[in-house]
Every structure is written in structure tokens, then in C-alpha cells.
Length: 251
Image (spheres, rainbow, N blue to C red):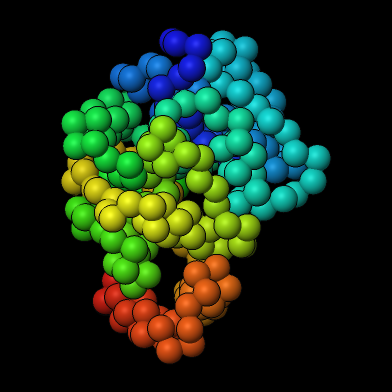
């Protein structure tokens, strides 16, 4: 591996002892080997850090940064982005998985097409690894498209820091990944999708679906008004798309 890795993988971890082994193994098994994995532990109370340190002892490409207070996912990811040395910044949460050719295929796609931000199709799986559904993304999205609905799965996203500079997530409790894609899409016209299934997203079944949807809707509205600084009229316009597309997904 080169001194400056080609890809920096950003992984937040909080009480991830049950899942982090599989996540790290899915990175170690990549056919593209020129990467660093920066895991930032957000003051876990389980043995997540011990597990991560086991893998650090056998693979020097894995790094661990320990937080001594619980900062939340946006700050934790931004700490990792700040430390990243790679040309490409990729995102993988501590309960999600990559398929072995994910980086090879996606980086080749970005180089061939001269792309600044890319994403792929992915599986939604349960805790046993069973496929619940497959998400096939729209293959070209703009800033306006993303205001209507988040088309990019965070576990599949990669951006080119050489083209864009380092771009950080807004410090909000939810929707911080969408906030990042919107920032990038103010710099470039489009993000581009690869319709290959290259990752597995662990779909947590919420105790209350209606409560979860209300919470998500609240943060979507705050993103429009507080982060994107849209007028009430424009926020209502895009929120109608968000609500309609969310309803279509659930039917």
C-alpha cells in the first residue's frame, strides 16, 4: 500500500460489538487493497474497542480513534474525515457490509467517468443476513433531486477529495449524510450511480414505524430550513415530494 492510501474508509462506531467484526472483515476482503479504515469510537460502553484493536494488531491499515464523550455520528465522521489521507473518501457504518469487489468496481467507475461523487445499489438485510429488499438507485441525481428524496445510501457513497477538497457533514442528529450530499451537489452538477449491488445495509426494524416516520420527517424539515436555508414555501414544496415518495416506498 502507498504512503498516501487511495481510499479512506470512514466508520463511526458506538456499542457495535455484535456487528463490527463482520464490517471490518468485509473491508479486509476487498480486492482493492490500497485503503485505510479510520474507525472513530463514540465512547462505547461495550467491548467494541477491544474487537477493533484485535484487527488493528493484524492489519496496519486499520486505525482507531477513541472519543471520551459521546459526540454523535456527524462529529465522529468528521473527525475521521479530518484524519483521512486518501484521494477517495468512502463511508461504511459499523453494522453494514461491503461486497468484496465494491472498491475495485466503484473506483474504476469514478476514474473512467471522471466522477466526483458516486454511489451504488445495495441489499437491505436483516440481522440473520437474509435479503429483505434490493435498492436500485436512480443513476444520475442533482441537488434538486436530492432535496426531494435521498437517493444515495451512505454505505455506498464515495467522493473524490482531490476534486472537491474535504467536505464535512453538517452537525445535525439525523440526515447528516443527506446534508453532505447536498453540499457536494452545490459544487458539481450531478452524482452518478452504479447499478451493481455492492453492499448490505442492516435494516433495523423500529418498534414504532409511525413514530420513526414522524421523527424522520421532523429532521427532514429542519434540514430544509436550518441547513439549506430554504424559504418556507420552497421547504413545503420539497417536503411534499419527500412525503409522497416516502409513502410510495412503504406501499
